[in-house]
Length: 250
Ligand SMILES: O=C(O)c1cc(C(=O)O)c2c(n1)C(=O)C(=O)c1cc(C(=O)O)[nH]c1-2
Image (cartoon, rainbow, N blue to C red; front, top):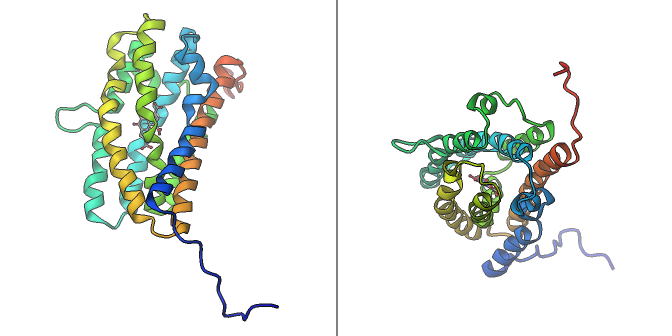
């Protein structure tokens, strides 16, 4: 027998916060980019100098776009208290007062591996696949709700472990990298947990419906996919050595 047309089945109830958090963490545990074959090669000391340089140069584009995506989030966030907190992320990367910022520290990493600032700033080694993936992140944050955009940054729950792995692995396997270059990763060990503690609480508190919780989980899956895609492009170019011929023949 069909139900009267006015009957609406109950929407799925929201998950209890502890279960929601468990599911968010499970997304990163299964698909964060620490498991990508490029990172595994790098962290086991199996990359050559050109592969490390390729990774540093391409990741620079990600670093350079982070404050732009955070500014996009600020521009759609109606809550003043949240904006006061979120703006700190832009300062962390662009620099604030005496702190030259994460982008500057990544440029030092570039110099430590033998890349000039100019080369990074002019995006000379930027692969098309990396550009598309990073641009997709900025675009996602411009076109989704501020809460989904904030939720997509929750991959940072898993970033300190991978930063620590690099701090341990680089001096051991790549003694040719100047020590100064590791400052970026050291600084993120204290910055990322602060960011992510705030964002996790926010997402758990503000996603009050099951639909909002599902949207936050989708945002996190999307972010894991784009981080993974960046490394696919790098693996193709620097491990399989397949690159698009440049149109100007260089
Ligand atoms: O080196 C890494 O593996 C890694 C990953 C991520 C991440 O998970 O998005 C970030 C960072 N580093 C990072 O340094 C950083 O500042 C950062 C900001 C964000 C973000 O989404 O707002 N992710 C990340």
